[in-house]
Length: 461
Image (cartoon, rainbow, N blue to C red; front, side):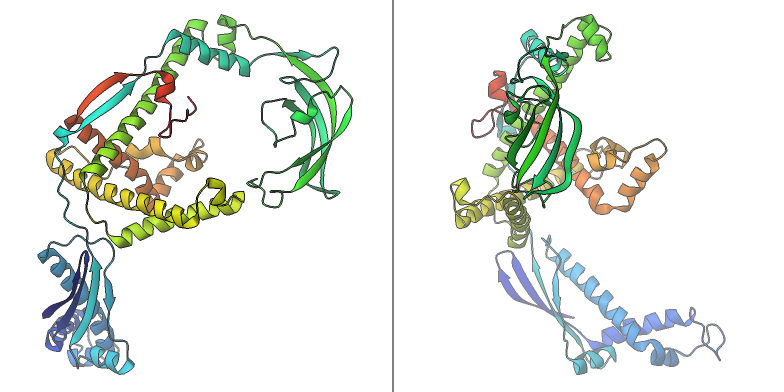
């Protein structure tokens, strides 16, 4: 066998490989001998079929199998000897002319092919003990608990019929309506006994506001437009009119926050409600803290590991993001100008993001391998049972009594779905490993500071 490297540019390599016809013939002959005891042919006793006769019948198919196996074994040995970690599947180029293929399958010519690959560069991991990471911490205060319970109470407040006057903001109006587009009724455009809280934002923009001032028994024509990103493509962006009649107007009352209120929520007392609210807020704050710490650590890993990412992986990641962005813009009708940018500038920005994601992915993978050496208990491939808590909502919806096995079977038989669950668990284990080595210091912050995003905007608490 002869191996010649024909390309060595950065992470890209190409080799020309030649395997003598005599080697192929010897391997194919061994396969035919093995086949002798397995085939049954008319006119021959079991195990007595001459190899020469088998070669006439099965020679080409056995040689094709031999060639495939030889290429696979040769490539694997080549990559192992040179210490290559492939970034993707190797690209193999072989003769395609019919005469050349016939001679190759007949064992009359050497096997000559080229294999092009892209490799993952060697990654020198940083000293994680030198990392300093700040951990923002917020204590749940009594005021936070009280505010949370007040929000719950507002959503459960009682309503009573309005004895006089028209509907106002925060009133609940029971309506019946018939919708039309260009004078034609459309599917889903009618409703009877529908309750609308004015100002709650439950209906399409502009609908609720036009109910202000309506009286019981009054009929109005409300003119609105469906959002451009409306789920129903046939209605998205369409102007519509709704002939609407108010059948009942109710005013909101105040919910009394006491033991009885707690019992309506399935809890024993107000104290138990406060405990539950505190636990939920504690978990919510901890989740936000975790995200902040993880983002800071990933930034630190990014800064400390600068290397060329395999172009094919970056291109694949970029295409996934870009296709998603374009699809979203098409559905919403937005343009790059709406985002104060241009398509070229956006592409450049997402190219950088794709490069970062690929590099971080490779770094996390490298750390994970070190972890498996350091910790015998670490598993890079958690079991299906360990992943149960990560099941997406689409699968959880299928969880009905007696159908649990269906969920397990789905993940056991769907490698891609299982990999999607494993990835975040693997990443979290790696992050925890690095954090154990890094110097993590806690910093007390306010709730508003904790829930500010990277651009300084406050996110939902």
